Image (cartoon, rainbow, N blue to C red):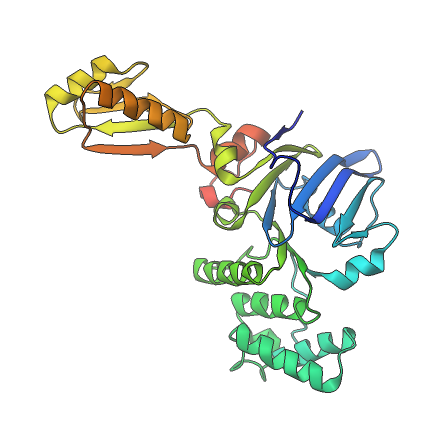
Length: 327
């Protein structure tokens, strides 16, 4: 059974909802019953190892492929019975750029405007606004093949926004970008959401999900292994603790006697106490210190990070890569 940390009975209206989504290719089951509820105006991140089915979920919800079973609604439209309604409400930025390198950035934008049946004047106005918004005005007249990776990704998302979608699927939007470009993309995503857009994000960067997502689901072996906020997921994994450091040896010894289940470091005058990082657990430790009349010089709370969560739930990591780059 997946671990799910739910928001009550889903009081928020769903931009995307799914129940029991299934998909197989031959004898390989890719999705084995996926349930989702993504409130409007939020960022939802789907994590999973390579081949877990993240892109398959995006393709089904964006009507690019059909599911073998289950049902889903996107922007209030059933993906099976009203795919045109879904397509009119969404934008999709895939893993691979849709930018045509042979034409300019501006021409790419105007082409998208034509595909959305915007009038000539409206297409030019929308193009100008988005080029300005994504800091591409200076490069607008240059062939897109001359753009850096970050510029191409910005143009890609700008093209996705031409039709004014309220729900955007971003499939690994920052893969291959340098840290500066990645952070720039994060800011763009935050601005989209502040404007009421819902973002469905798949990513290979755990730091990215931690920074951006209101809720995160971990996909493994065709099912959702766990879902919740980043903090909720981190609390699922043991290893969290509170560290107390003292400058007074006497206070250190008194605290070591007053507290239970501690790990001592007599040289550093520090104590480590197991904790799930919750407010309740922290209050219990502080109450015991107050009762004993002890004041620590430094208190730090350590919780497992998403890398620990990911490994515990999937047993998967990428050798030789930094924590943020585990897929």
